[in-house]
Every structure is written in C-alpha cells, then in structure tokens.
Length: 115
Image (cartoon, rainbow, N blue to C red):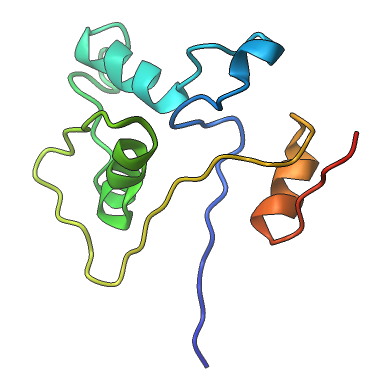
C-alpha cells in the first residue's frame, strides 16, 4: 500500500497570498524572513547556532524548492540534494477564512468558501 506524509507547519509561510493586504499581512513570508535574519547574523546565539539558515532535512524534502515555486526567490540549502522520492509544491488558498482550521480542511481537499 502506498503512503504519503503531509507536513503542515502552522504559521510558517513561504510567501504571501494575493489578498494578504486585506488582512494586514502584506509582505508575509516567514521562511524568507527567518533566512534573512540568519544571513544577517540576527539569529546567531552563542553555543546554539550561527550563520546562514541550515535545514538540510527540510531542504532535502523540498522546502527550498517549494519556496522558490511560491515566490520565485532561490534558497541556498548549502549543497543539500533533493531526495529522489521527495515532492514539493506551493498553492494559493481559495477558502474565505484566514484561520488555521479552514486551511487544514482545504489542504485535505475541502475548501471552506463561506465565513
């Protein structure tokens, strides 16, 4: 039996939606902002982490490629190769709400087109 794993990282965006300005979220892109803060040294913590964002496992599963699909911006994954069995994607929500439950319903195949 084939199986798939779906990783949902709540509040972790890889680009803003077309209507983001309606919700005060214009310029939203959590992934890019974290990568930028790391590159600028604003996320360096002595004894914990330093330097550019390094997430090899997520990169090998396609996180950087999904972000590139969503925004057109590249992500340096420090030479991490994409796994042959990994798939990635990016989508624009069609549900009316901005809430987490409607997003989960939609990603499972049932858009919520009412408030």
